[in-house]
Amino acid sequence: MSGRTAHFLGDNPIRVLLRLIVLSFVVGLVLSVLHIHPVDIYYWAEDMVYRIWNMGFGFIQGGLGYLVVGAVIVVPLFLLSRLLKVGSGRAD
Image (cartoon, rainbow, N blue to C red; front, side, top):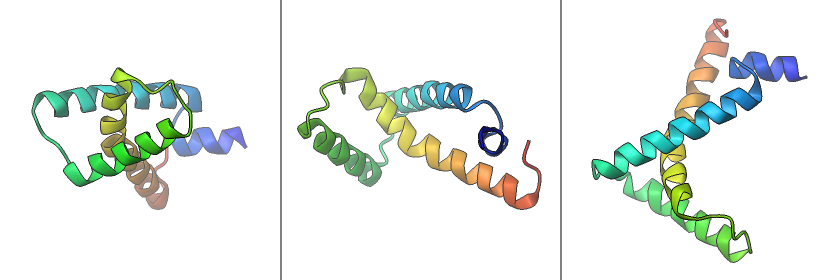
């Protein structure tokens, strides 16, 4: 099963996760510095973070805000690109 997962993701799942975390942080930071805000998506993500916070997950703090903002953009684009590669038969 992990072979299929690694095939779909293009690498070891842990390495892909670490790359996505770093890329999400960087994209979120750059978007924040450039004052580019995908407002509706951001407020949806912010609302979800507040709901999780209110459920008692106290580990969400400052830097994770950048992670969430970046992940809102990076993760869907990553999944879309992987689905398009798998659909065209070019998966790595």
